[in-house]
Image 1 (cartoon, rainbow, N blue to C red):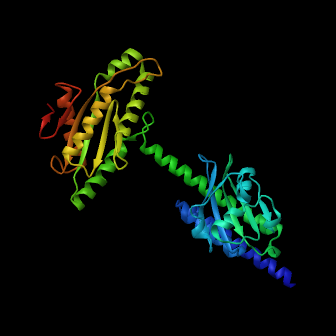
Image 2: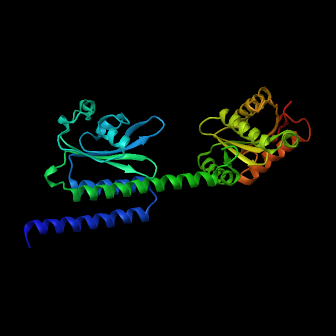
Image 3: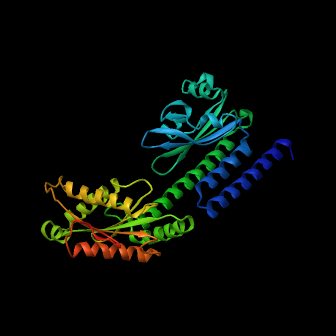
Length: 350
């Protein structure tokens, strides 16, 4: 057997091993980072570039950013962005075609500014698109590979690995989307009741462990049935969506808003005592009073709400009890004044 044939067989054996390892990573984990890391590590082991990177497409900004970068320039690349179409990677992202550039100096598409920013010297680039069915998700770039060892077979192998990476990214995004759908209410975009109890259990555990308070607001819209009866369910759904948006807009990033069901909403305020929670409840009540809804439909609906407030651990110590207390306070308002706030152990606000 000639030396060339022996080298070829060794290469094929290495490729098979890599395919096996990558397939195993794909089927045994839903963790995108670990799958991509496996793919990139195998690529580096096979092609031995000076530096290599995975750039992802940020579709909103029409830019590429370095999701993974390995090598001396890695740290400097963290904050670098390329416009789609800029540089060799940008060209590949735009066209969806692979590009092999043995000498970047002679290629007008090369973006020299990246080397200037990283103090790196790029001589050659192999750049491959990560394609899903509909678009380019990202680009894998190998810098300063020994081009004498790169044949069509190697490029075919590299593109196959990139296809694996694209599958991993697509799968991870679908899983994320499915998880979102299982915990999100379709109508309002807020979390649903199923996710409420899971989140509350976590908050009870955390607050009990660290000695925190937290508060819950239970919100029920006043006379919502009249809206459905007068204007129909489509307008009712639009109203709920607008109120969900209003509720979310009044909260901090650490707070949670849920659609409990029908025209009922729940707000969870972590690390928030009763007096602080009352400030939020008043803000929500006043925002409802000041707002008119379904204006695009020419209706200018004014809707008020009955709000109940309870605080852990003073009013209740379990997830279900804290909801029950806030719910009871809401009903106290509903059965007396409406358009007001009921506070556990204090009654309806004067």
